[in-house]
Every structure is written in structure tokens, then in C-alpha cells.
Image 1 (tube, rainbow, N blue to C red):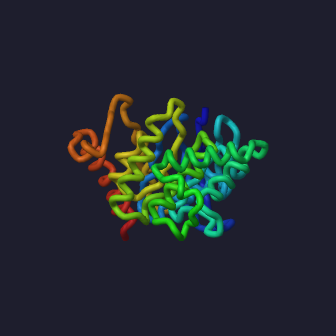
Image 2: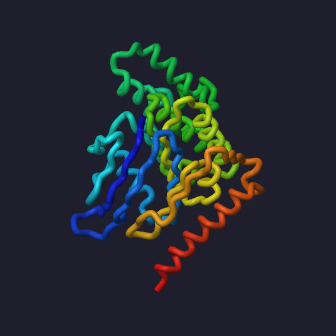
Image 3: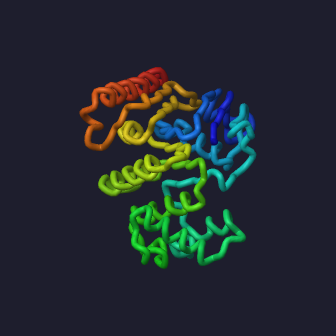
Length: 261
């Protein structure tokens, strides 16, 4: 189980400085795919860093199954927009680095097998194991970053606009990859996926949190019905999806209007 509780969460980068996040409170159930939606600069990535334990709250707290986050953990995998691969290591070595940290006593040959299995799972050829990041396209590097994060099988996956710098076709393929991997899991991971793209949030998430402008708080919280199935084929025809899209855009625009002076 990975139930997450966020209570009265506030954050500023400097003591006494301007708040980036202000009084955020919500409960996330284990296995939810949560898309965090909002405009640039609203604090989406900051919230993800707090969930990762890379930053500490100015006020309030985040707990996972009742235990307060005090730092980073291998139980929380992170995928960044800039891939996060060490350029002096091959793709395989990057994945192995995560595996060795998580399974220090495991045989190295078995860990390599796991790394190769993950490379295959994200749709790459085994030859990629020995290639350096500079030898790979942006889409291939992001697949390797996803393979690295998933290789340790963390119950929580944090993704910070992972497809924002990719072309439309590669982006669509990786969206489908993540959705398919999550759908196939018997015990689903809890996923937090930061995006500013309304259509991406609707396609991927079964829960959507919309953050207002800084100092941010949750201005809209959507939970999909359990029997609602959305795919790339019907996302622009489905009545529920169209209503949701309009509501999300409306909420964001109302928040923008309220801040214009």
C-alpha cells in the first residue's frame, strides 16, 4: 500500500520568502494515476520535489502510509524532463546503478538480466545497454530513464513533465507506453505525472489535480469513474472527456482572470 496524505502543505525556497505552495491538502489512494496540471511557474515541479523528498516543506507535511517524508527513498522512483542519465555511463550502467543501490547483495549477472528485461519492456533493443546517452535520441534516452526508474519496482513513480521536450510522435508513443505499463500491473503503482497539457492529463490520469497560480493551492480535483475507459482512439469523441476538457480549461482560465490586475 502507498496511500499518500498531504496536509496543510506550504513551501517557500527561502525562510520568510514568497510562498510557492500554500495550504495544499489532499488524500491520494494507492494505485491512482495522478496528473498534476497547471500553468508554468505554478509550483507543479516543486510539489513533485517535495513528494520525492528533494525539498522539505515550509509548513504542513506529506505522509506515506502514515510515515512522514524526511528525504529521498528508493520506494519513490523519479523521471525528470532532462532524462537524468549520467553522460559518462552507458544506458545499461545507468540502470545498473539504480539496481545495485536497491539490491546491493544481488548477483551482478542477475541484475544485468533485470536491466536488459527493462530495456526490452520500454521497447528498446538490447544493444542500447552499451550505448552512451549522446548516442541515443531524446525519446530513447527518456525510455532508458523510465527503465531505470521502473527497474527497482518502486510503488510510487514521480514524473516531472517527462515528455515535454519530445516531438509529437515520440511523445504519443511514450504516453501509450506508460499507460500500457501501468494498466498491465496487477498491483498498480501510485503515479504522479506533472504536465501543463490538458489533453495529456485527460488521457493518462484517473485523477487530475489542478494547481492555481503561485502561491498555489488545489483549485480543481477530478476523479474518473471506475468504469470509464479512455484511449487515444476516442479521447476527442468521448462525451465525458470533452466535458472534462472544457471544465479543466475553464478552471485554469478563471484562475488566470482572477490574478490579472
